Length: 202
Image (cartoon, rainbow, N blue to C red):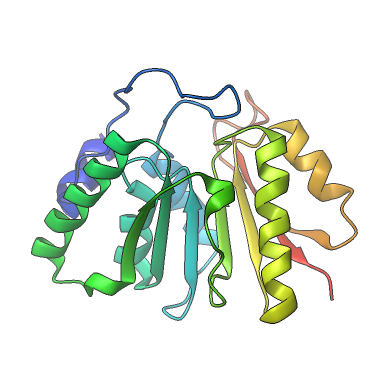
């Protein structure tokens, strides 16, 4: 099973066990992106070592470790749940022991997504439907605000996205859909099983 194989390969534990209900109706329960879906995403969407990826609602850090393992990119995980944050930090220690990666290239912050201060080098932002569209809009506004002081190319990557997220970006004057990756074998039965990549229009 891919889930067990990659967790063992990366020396981490990122299973689906829950830690109670989210403290706000605006935040959704933790569920990691399946490794099979990530494999298919990165067949068609390549990252660079110089990229700085932010995963909102990172849980135990699966995406962060997988990206760093594949591409060597800097990855920042944002998680509001203190227990998941602690487990992500434990995973980080175990991952670095085995992979001897650079500590500074994998980072986790325990805070609300809308309170994360966008770094001038953050350029890829990942969302697996972690919260309501109201929170999503606040985060997107924070990203756009950061572009005013630090202009750069950025991309928004959505997985299993709510219709509200898609509607918001499709009708936003500053965003355009650049890539759609439908997951083979499952998209035909569930239209949410896809990745959407949006970029800023200059």
